[in-house]
Length: 153
Image (cartoon, rainbow, N blue to C red; front, top):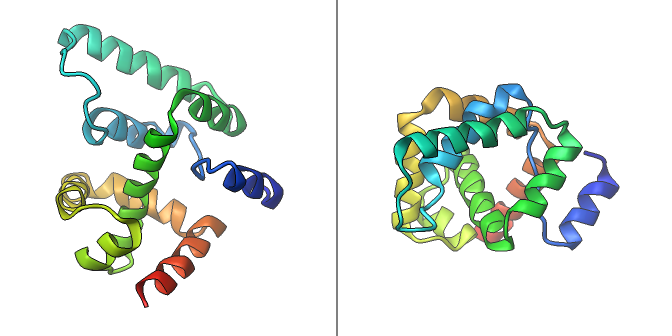
């Protein structure tokens, strides 16, 4: 992502996107099926849920990075983008050694949510390690860590 594209997205309060290439599909599947809260209490039949999850991920796999960003920006509400962004940020802060109280202060999320995220990370260490390794080197991650440090001071 180029600098002007990131600035444009930031002004519109759009979540910085990560690369949604085929290697990331397992991670996206995890977010989609395990971490995102349930929107409706009306449960789908398991077979229907499986099929629509597979359809969603197949669609994401076919997109290039720019298309993925556009689709997710159009598909997700601002609240959903913010919720996912905070969870990604919490994962990154855990990795950087931040404590619960620091994460709560920086991201304004409650300890229960922080604990749920930490438990998901423990259950799926390999995929989250790979994900955070990729994000660790991005300019967005460096900018975020600088901001987190200043907010935590």
